[in-house]
Structures are given as C-alpha cells and as structure tokens.
Amino acid sequence: MPSAVELRELEDDELETRLVEYRRELLNLRFQLATGQLDNYSRLAQARHNVARVLAILRDREIALAEGRQAGPVFIERPVRPPRRRPGEDEATDADQTEQFDEQGPVEAEGDDDDAVDEDAVDDDTAAGEDEAGEDEADEDEADEEDQ
Picture 1 (cartoon, one colour):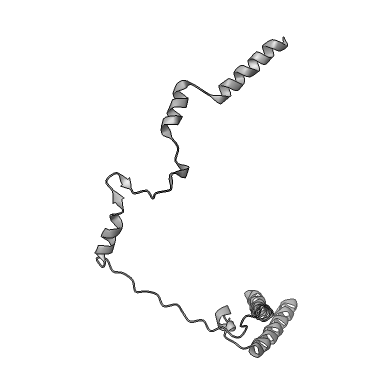
Picture 2 (picture 1 turned 60 degrees about the horizontal axis):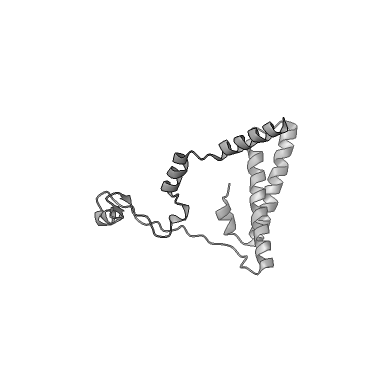
C-alpha cells in the first residue's frame, strides 16, 4: 500500500494508471465478497483508501492549476533534525534562562497591568459591607410594603 507521500511524487499519467489498477482491484474484491471467496475483508478498505488517495492528489493538482500554483509532482525531502543535546551540554544557556526570575518570583513584563485587579479597592468594598444583591433585596422589601 503506497503512502500519500510516495503517490505525490508520481506524474499525472502514472497516477491515472494507478487509479485504474486500484479500481479494478476493488471490483475484483467486491466480486470475491459476493461469491464468498474473500478471505481478508480488510483488503476492501485498503483498496478504497488507495482509490481515495489517488483521487485526492489528482484533485489537489487540479485546484493548484486553477489557482496558478505549481501542480506537478512534489518531491518532499525529510527535514533535517538538529542533533540532540546531551545532559551537561550548554549549561550556560540553562543558567541564563533561570536568571529571568528575581528573588520574589518571575519578572513581569511592562504593560501587562490591564488584567490586574486593584486588591485595595476589592478589600474596601467587602469591608464596607456593600453587596449589590443585598441592596436589591432591600429595594424589593420596600416595594412590597408600599403595595400592602
């Protein structure tokens, strides 16, 4: 079963021939299923997936041509991964990263005070006993007394 990466490297003509092959294989598998000769049912799903992969790649190329992008085969090279760091290497960079904290905790960037809450104002409101829900209840009680 070819992967999508392998199929993307093929020319359009080769993809068309693969599509015909995969559809013929799917037809044969359906006949085997109908006659009770199919041993491995997962081959049906694999054949359907192969047909879908080829159709998706062909459609992607068709869309790319309509948009004016390059639509030919795509050769994908594996990305080069940087080598792994071994423990003990570059300890200086680790030390530099830990210096961002001061004695009392992380250093906050300037301009981040938009979300900050004035704790003194919150303490004053709770100390004074002001509660919006309590004021609403008192207004309702007065209104009930006037109605009676």
